[in-house]
Length: 165
Length: 153
Image (cartoon, rainbow over all chains, first blue to last red; front, side, top):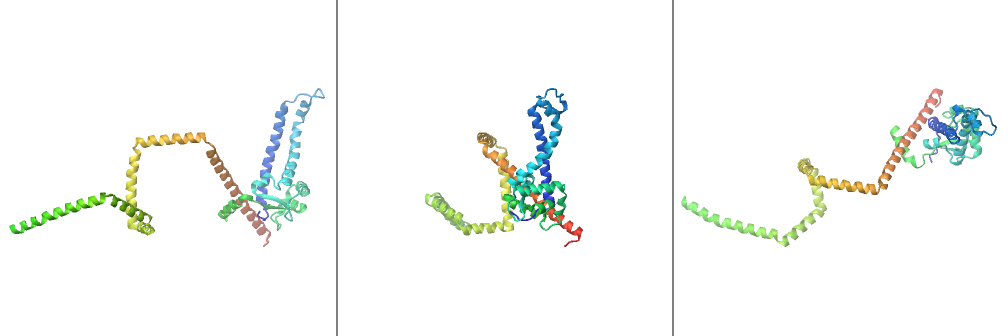
């Protein structure tokens, strides 16, 4: 593992990949729910009987997408960061989230980091090029760092790096 | 004058006979099993000899010799290729071989599939490494730019 702290561009690219994947996930989930339940949100009938769950769900679908958009991203981040120390976007870009002392992150750090990120709307990332360990505000608050981890591909990346230097 | 011609004729006769005898001897010698074995041994010794190999390499590296050899090879190659192109037997042989290979590939598609998968994986790996390297360089560039803007060292 290359213990070099990752910068703004790599981390930004990882986040963009994650957002794209999350958008697919949210859209895919709502599409799947509609397909499984046979709901068409454009043609919802009136709810006359209280036991008509499908009609009630149909009316709820526009809100369900918003709810998915709120719920799925945090679940996605918590799940991947606590189990693998990286989200799929971070894996593609060769990044890993660690505690400031180099140990693997736990649920507490991930929750704290995410909370600060949402509260600051991600603007804490402007600190990345300004701090010595390239830490954003949510990293400083949660006691984490993001490092390059190219795994088995390290030699390939170094070879590619020689072309750009 | 006549005396001199007569003397010359007398000398030619035994010389022609000698040549014929010598030719017959040489032919016998060359065609004999002993000489064949001997030649074979000489050729083998020469082909296995490091010194001869060095000498051939040295000669081939000489510009004059190299040019001559190249020319010779090119001419021979052209001739051989022209013959091969017009050969119906060769075409038939190639067709047979292609059919055989295709049959073999149809019966055993796994190595080809593996090869294609490996190639695709290698390509993805290369693109990923390239993206990572570009981002890595861009990270440093952004840091340097920010430091410059803020007037930090």
